[in-house]
Amino acid sequence: MATAGLHGAAQVVAIDLDENRLELARQVGATAAVNSGHEGWADRVRDLTDGHGVDVAVEAVGIPVTFGMCTAMVRPGGSVANVGVHGAPVQLDLQDLWIQNISISMGLVNTTSLGMLLKLVAAGRLPAEAFVTHRFALDDIGSAYETFGDAARTHAVKVLLSR
Image 1 (cartoon, helix red, strand yellow):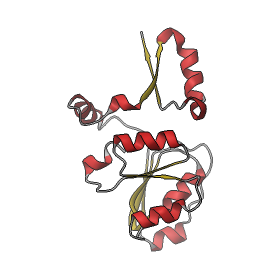
Image 2 (cartoon, rainbow, N blue to C red; image 1 turned 180 degrees about the vertical axis):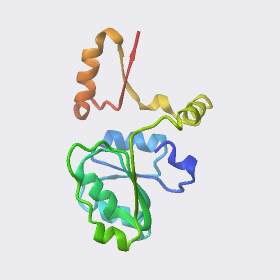
Image 3 (cartoon, helix red, strand yellow; image 1 turned 120 degrees about the vertical axis):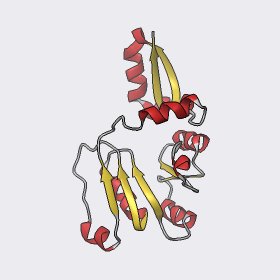
Image 4 (tube, helix red, strand yellow; image 1 turned 135 degrees about the vertical axis):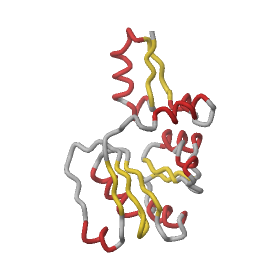
């Protein structure tokens, strides 16, 4: 959400089940937020894109249903970027995606853009601090893991440990 506008996206749509994460997405760059737990969420995305679908869909959760959502909402000629870590097989409806000329990219997180991202944070162009929802002393790492592990209840996005 925070970097999409820097790459030229005129509209950035956040989709999530959690209202707290949707609010954070709005704060860091989303121009619209859609709760996928509400009926009609896909229609809302279509309305936001004048019925065409999104240019790029980023799957960042790592579960089959969100990958399917991405392939369903991307416009013909669009791209799906899979950055979520999947622990279960995902169905790929190649016969449908091929005819729509959909590109799919995926891979492990790398550090090739780290230097640029750190410069953007230092220049105040990326709101990195907004993602830190909980702070713990390093000695309290157990509580930090519990908090992050129960993010639905604690509303944890990123947990910061410090000495």
